[in-house]
Structure formats: structure tokens, C-alpha cells
Amino acid sequence: MSRVRPRTVVLAAVALAVLAVAGGFAFFALNGGDAPAPARVPTSVGAVAATPDGTYAIARGDDSYAGYRVDERYLGVGVRTAVGRTGLLAGSASVRRGRIVTARFAARLLGSLHSDQDGRDRALQARGLETARFPSARFALTGPVALSARPVGARGRLELHGASAPVAVRVSAARLAGGDLVLVGRAPVAFADFAIAPPSVAGLVTVRDHGTLEFRLRLAHRR
Image (tube, rainbow, N blue to C red; front, side):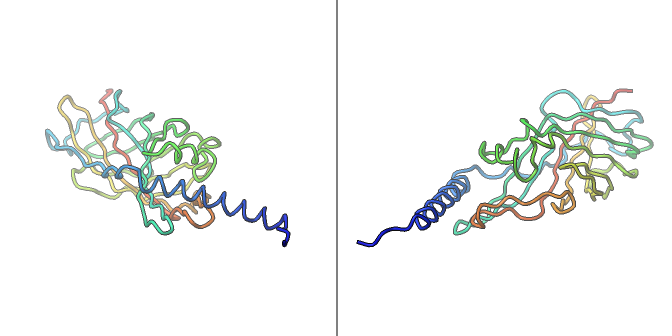
């Protein structure tokens, strides 16, 4: 009877472990819910360009979020879109003559960035976004942008994963009854700009090297 070499046993065990992990990710792909649709700007109660001047800060409640949208490829399964969002936000914007002239926002990621899979959220603490090391993200507008119900271009700077890089945002706005301002937008994000290594499981489960930043912000008029 031929002897099984210890090295062969070790390699077989590693292969089984990899397949088990990949199989677990495939289970997520097959059993997770559909990705939520991107937010749309609500119907405005008045001309958004006529928004009163002043400072608008993140309103209390669960109407605001920021997060990611990225495609995950599962070998033999296909591509699935993953969406994660956090509602722990802070910040404000200054409006002058129908334009946002300054804006700064921060988002808490660690412990509050949630998708439809707890396993994915836990994995991002140590891989990809590494939220355990970089628990928050920040955005600052770098030039004025007109308030418009239709998407318009804006420029900003995003701090993410310990790095900072410019981003191009498409943003639209609406005024709600009571005077609150809603901003809805998205921006493409190349992971390399923020030194983010796309998570991968032995090439069987891979994440695209780019994604989308998404946000819906409800801002209350402070003064």
C-alpha cells in the first residue's frame, strides 16, 4: 500500500479550506437579497434654486445615508451587486443664492456600515475598506455647485482608507415641506486612488477594482 505524503495531505486540506470559504461566499451570492436601488431625489415643494440662504446641517432621523455600491464576481455563479450603507453622519452645507458654496460631511463606518450580509460587513473590518483601522470617511466640496432637481456636476475631496483624493460627484436636490433640503448623489471611486486592495478569495470570489459612492442627505435649515 502506497503512503500518502504529509505535504499532499496539507495541500489537500488547504484546497478544501479554500473551497469551503469560496462556497460560503457563493452561498451569500445565491441567498442574499436584491441590491437596493439608488436613491432618487424626492418631489420638491418649490423651486430648489430658491432655497433660502443659510447653513443646512444633517437632520435627525433615518432619512440620511452614505455608502458604497460595488460588483462582486463569483466563479461559476456570476456577478452580484453589493450595497452597504451607514446612517451615522454629521456635517453641514452653506447655501448662497441658489448654490451650495461649502459642504463638509463625515460618515462613521466601523460598526455601522451594513449590507445584506453580516459576513461581508465583518470581512470589511479587516479587508478592503479595513474599517477597523479606518473607522470613518469624510467628504469636502471643493467648488460651488448649483442647486438643481436634475443631476449636476460637482467637485469634492474624499478621505477614505487613510488616503485623500478628488472625486467627481453628480448631485441633485429638492426642498421638502418644512424647509429641509435633500441632496442625492453618486460618484465613481477607483480603489487604487485610496490604496484599497479589492478583496479576493483565491480568485474564486473577486471584487471589482472600482465602485460607486452613494448618498442621500436630509439637511435642516439652521440659520
